[in-house]
Image (cartoon, rainbow, N blue to C red):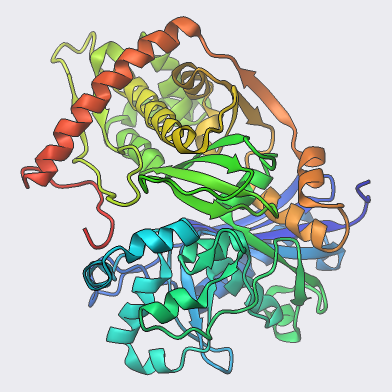
Length: 523
């Protein structure tokens, strides 16, 4: 039974913004306070992405106050708070609990440390991958080595390490802890034991005593302190509950909480996720594997790079008339573009977009962004055709990433859940169904990550009996899209052509003719 009282607060430290989202205990969104933020580069260090703990905490405090004001509620009506965040980012603390340094998720300043690890310890990355499901590329090991090399005074003072959502909770209650779903992305963590593996750090010459307690999502770790109450307006003594990584809590908020369930999260990056009944890593090391926020489950995860950002680029660079029309109609520009693209046949008259590749976790880089097979006849090659081709391409990359996961896990199903900003587009939902050949389910609540955080908070104080039961009870569905089998056959041929074209475009990067859209640190 779900009790009928109070509100739940979920704080989300995302890649592009900080948010405070209020839900009632039935899972209905009540209010949101949100501010965009940027994670600035340190000009001394190429490809760095700092996490400013002072500015970002002040921003989150404003978001909390704004959410309460928007909802017209007293903070005293909030019964619990939890947090989620972008994964991979880390915060380092000294013995007094003062933050020493922090970085956001795709900080790549430690590229040389990645190369040195591979050179000095041949085969170690593969060994650690089998334990943690992670490679060196975005993990904590090379970043800690970078701090050791470039910030020796700070390095000597390190007493604790945490992930970013852990830091939010630390600011609220003064306790440092982590959970499997977020801590697992550090690469110093066991998929099987769901706990830190200090020996991994010790093997490469790093301290092995800096790891905080690891507890499951939905565990109370403390109470809002007097200082945090002054900062946020939240009541002192409010229960603070362990949250987790944004993708895993997003899956909780989508009801993807049982073995063999599949989700595609469509945002700036797209994630393709398959729940595993037990940990299993990819013999080819193409796919990352993370602990789920649900105790006992793991997730195979593939990532499609810059999908949402590619669409934003196309919109902003080429679609000013459509944007103006959208303003007149009081709709989103993407809605106008989708209406135009509906008239284009499947396959987009042969246009082949080259942006994100399928995931190759152990050798992760992309070709140069390009569009192939363009024609100079605007009646058959215009904005509508390119827009549809971009939507089709995102679905094709997702389908191929899922095939990689199915190949080593032997897990498959005929239904997947689609969420995130991309799922607001009916055409895109249908294309995903047609390309994958699977029924696509779209939830009512699009703020799935924040809802997952609210579920964690509610579980912590006993509002819900457990994460799985709460997800079953609170997640509701807006629409199902069934695949068109004729279109599925067309897209099989399109996928084959795309794969051959992409391989040729990657070869141009290898030959230094073109520049990769993105390369993992150390390549």
